Structure formats: structure tokens, C-alpha cells
Amino acid sequence: MKVAELREKEVKALHDLLGESREELFKLRFQHATAQLEKTHKLGDVKKNIARILTVLREKSAPGA
Image (cartoon, rainbow, N blue to C red):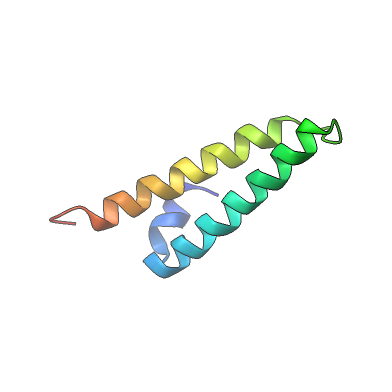
């Protein structure tokens, strides 16, 4: 998901999306550990998406925002 799309969302929706992304990362890590994950690049994609969400949440909670 692009940062511009994330900035349009409400804080509540971002928190929900963050929870879903963290759950997806957990599942992907488990699959990777058991050698069931074929597309390992998804781990990096999900991590980057989590970082983007956290960045937008920080921007929205910053004073003067």
C-alpha cells in the first residue's frame, strides 16, 4: 500500500490495518521457519508496509499535525 493511500485513512483504520499486517507477518514467519514459504520476498514487503503504517500514525499523532 502506498503512503498516500495510508495518509487518507483514519487513525482507527490504520490501527486495524497495523494489526492485520502484524498477524500476516507472524504467519509468514511461521511458514518460513517450517520451510513452507516459497515467496520469501513477502516477508520484506509486509515489514515495509508495517513501517509505512507506523510512520503515518506517528505523523498524525505529532503535535502541529
